[in-house]
Length: 385
Ligand code: ATP
Ligand code: MG
Image (cartoon, rainbow, N blue to C red; front, side):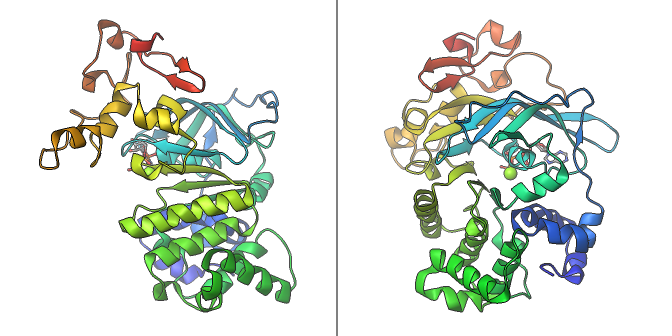
């Protein structure tokens, strides 16, 4: 049994939530039948009338997200939109960075892709086409086959994700066995082989260790081993380096690069830090208040951002253009104001109140996405819309 029921019962609600999310990576089937954690889990509701299957994709993109709307409901039944008309695709072997400030909907997006949202969430519209199948309309059995095996999720807190009293080797074996049947010997060899991909000569020691005997970086590497174990074609990593120091962050990012090349993996790397995406992501999607503000090639986004939000975000980063121009001792610019409360947002561009370039029409309606060059779309009236 991959997770110890007693352990889960003893966890705080936040840790339980995170464990529930992480379980999707590798042991979802086993958990569903054994853990009390899952007994209270309810699948996100689909709005009636949205069940129509989408036309099959052109087979080129690995993943196509189309017009995805997600909302959360409070206990009193008040609706709060979190994603609004989010569309993008990911090609085989491509790395897409998803960039946005806290609360912009990054984790909601990651969870929605695999229908792992909490019970108070509702996927209201859209399609998530993966290898020709709409995951939002797939049956639970099919989803279980895809989670972990075809799409793996990696979250930011490895210490919560790993079981404290089961050795790492066994946890990898559990992950592999959740999707395929192997004899004991084959399973042992496979688990060691997966760890060797990540740890080289240290794999046997890591396999024999408990999570608390590993550093944060090593724990994150174990999660990466679990993620690649079943040979997924897509890894979705939600702030995978957020809890690590700068040097270890770079190690983990270069490991992502290596694995991506070696296994021809597609990657969705979610972060609030643009610097992490340079040299790793092929394209960047900038999410603001649940909407795609800008999407384009990494170099374009990082060196000549077009949306005023992207520009402000990059300028507010340490080492950004503004800081270099002003010298190290000047204060970093901040984006004034706050992201809008989407429950109350009615019309207009959602960045309008914080935008230094706003125009009259920005309060009248939301700008549509405009293609300003090949593969570079911006939702801002400065470029049309
Ligand atoms: P961060 O960078 O802090 O992780 P994020 O971009 O991942 O933020 P989300 O966690 O996706 O943002 O949250 C998007 C919006 O949805 C926020 O307004 C948040 O308050 C809301 N939200 C997230 N989870 C829930 C929930 N379980 N119930 C109600 N609202 C939620
Ligand atoms: Mg998040």
